[in-house]
Image 1 (cartoon, each protein chain N blue to C red):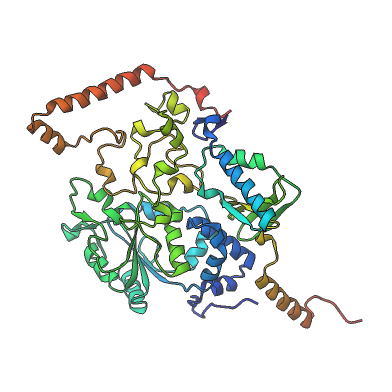
Image 2: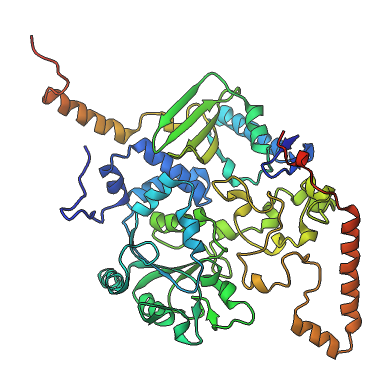
Length: 372
Length: 139
């Protein structure tokens, strides 16, 4: 007995998620599968599956307004290329995405009218999702329908129940904020201080982490537990290093020194190649990317630390964390203090490393690339 | 030796997650026998090296029961060679794995007929009989 929740104009009633699924003929068994996958997606223990089922069944569809500011659209790409299409489409069918100017057909005045209507109708209850940083320099650096990013954010935030900042640009300023920050880019939390904000950083964030946060809000009607910089602990609670399958090599002191030496081929620790795993908190080591297929460290590349504030200004992606950073201003300080010898020593160290790498360099042959 | 899609060779050094996980399964099976308590292990919550998941599945093997669901995409459920230890793999409609669990139980809940589905089924069957949709004619 399926309830028809469709209205005559083709839109759907904002019933509970249970009612929406029932109207679509989704069986209880399918729903339990959805809940099991959602629990896994939310990094919750499987014993919570029955509780999730009960909560999701009674969850109401929230209105979601998605704003994109100074960004590359990578966050939206990440989300829309999510692998668990049927499961995630259910999550998205469970929200009312009322504004997303990259995805929606409407543009200009019509699009803005949709945003304003959704804000008015759901004032105090809608979720505001933001990707991209906000320029505080010339407002003309980034506008939508002639409205500056700052104005659109402050206006849209007024009636939001909560804000989800998606991607490192929205959470910490990201690449636009990188030195010398020509647009005066800042994060959402630098502007909005009177609303609950959940930070979902990453360049881009893992798609199931984005949907996991939405699922948590849908399920429990509240924001998940956050760490000291506003990230959900379920996904950002442990460092990449602590969860890395290569960690035991670090403990044994076995490191890849170059990208094609014996250590690299044997899958040893990438710390000396600049891996930022020890200072980066994210779910890549377990959730992985592209449908759980692999992730950067498994592919032999060090972690860039893209979910951390100022990762772009961290002193070099391929410089080990134990090496001193060498930004220009710091070098100038060394020189002024008569400590040029320190810079020379670092230079000598790097030259020594380069020479050593050249000596052990082994060229990859076609035979190495064969999978058999 | 396993070879990942990126030509990273992984030898026996990279299999330290296999044994602890199998011990966890053994402990859970002991609990099931002693107290009837069931357990679920989410394989996606454990940082596994390339080839380790395959080693775990190979070690557990396949037993007598093998079921396939069609619910939001297929799901494959089988009892491993160790009775009471089940492997559940959920796929999406594009056949990509969306979640994978080891369940230590007499029978996974998702295999049982669900209360809500049975209620709907009873109503549908009753309605079909009342409207003679089944095509059964009185003689």
